[in-house]
Image (cartoon, rainbow, N blue to C red; front, side, top):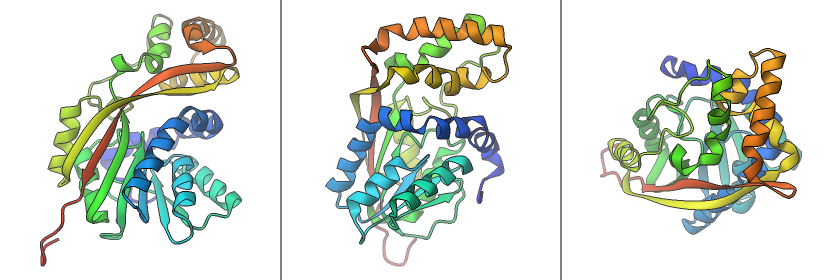
Length: 289
């Protein structure tokens, strides 16, 4: 890995440890689950006429590859993520698909030395909520963007708007006393729940024309993958790696019951409540950077 700031060491350790490996193992499930969000970003890329795209927090590369296919051989899409296991998986996918317009780099966006003014569009599918210094990160992204470049990011709204995403920890909490509580505004899934806070971060980072709109989409994945989902991912998936077999079995039984309302036939279905975050890089005055 390169350019990982000491300040972001906690996120680097998380995503280069169990969390990153778990995302690689459940790649197919997550790709299916978040396909509607990928489609939203692809539409946004098309709408702004993008040619050189930076995909922030690209994970295992699904969105980067989709955008690269859309841009064709004359465009380019660079995926960046702090997780080495996920970047290796993304590179392998690109190699299998023989898609040279898609490239990947393992780096901390907060400190990575991007080529200045290299991208006309910056996108992210659920990848911008994990910075310990988001102003620094978005400032760095602005320097990597061309004059007038478009920013289009999807982020989760709050936990109350996304009950599916908190079902595991709410149901398992009585059985797992060591389960850490979510901290408002801390790096993590719901760090961008507060729209006013996100707008302030972008303004402080030098982005203009900020527009943050709520939307909801139905997401789905195979019901056969439900146990993998809740035993590998999120706060519960992390702590289950440390508990004894009896506790794990009890948690798994409890969670199957808790998720039952979301199982519809052969699928797990839920509504994802997100923000579409839009902004534009300012046009620099001649002689200024």
